[in-house]
Length: 443
Image (tube, rainbow, N blue to C red; front, side):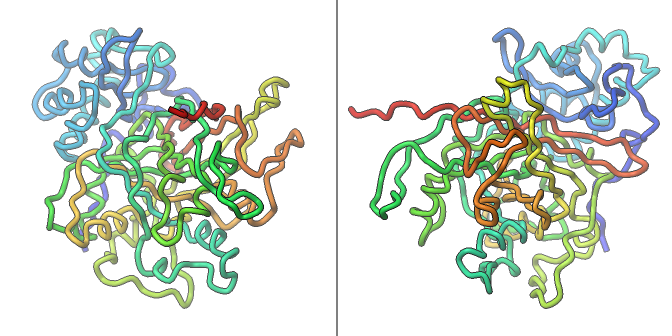
């Protein structure tokens, strides 16, 4: 059995500390064991590649110009220095691994490069973070059994799962051009849906929802006509981010049959700005979801022993929310979802293997969404639609009631990977506020 998981090395050492003080702060997302990649700018200047460490960003272009890298790490730093990380992703995981090891050595306590490198750190609160990749394609899966069953129960309580769900990772192609970075507001879109009397109506959507998802970003591409086998599928994933697949549920109900979602999903997708590498997540590998008694066994092209043993990820995911009233009253944000990636029925390697099984080529920077990461418990319902199906709506701690999101509501996701014997790492925030609908043009 070939194990394609990233190997553990000195960059994962829990005893390694950074000379950047905040990298040791309790609860930080960005200790030296993480080192995620992103793209930033300062004071409206050019976009540049960077690496997060504590509350700072290492400016890769400046560190490169100062001679802090050589060999493969230098080539990787050059590829990661510009306005998009796609050139780094295209080099493959070996290049990013070499850069990670070199940056870890530079930022470690006792590094001979501390005095030089300190000049190329920028406080995170003084930068603007941008979409880190050029997204050519965005495929959204539906990989949570619990989400799928809750949404299907209203249609057919006896058979809530679609016939194909237990056999393959179901997905649809979404809109790459509307992927936006955390912090950008979402304007309530217009759409066509059914009024209560059953007649079509057009106007600002009434049922705007979030979906707590996890995103995987493709690194090196495969060629058209050359499927990626399950045993190598995980190697094609550069890293991961948090993802909010905003959904217009009223539009979705009207348009979905028979071809699936369209304008109900293309309105906007928010992603977190930092790409946490597959190498950083190596300590948090987990077994694939254990199938239930009576479940169909997937066909061999979707099964590999190594992927079943450690193809999952142990990452806790939370959704937080504030309303205009909560902010006006100074209320604490409400955590409205607590779930885990361990609840996904399909691994990301299985998603890649299935996606390419017909010869489809995945390109560098392509984004794969997990689908709503719901768990079995009530607090694991990772979108409002599930709460509406089961309880009619959400009651917030201050007594406010929500069926779906209202103007001014703000939603954000956080994620954290933790395991005994390793330093926990996080993903930053995936955040957006709902703005009122803009006037629809009449001419």
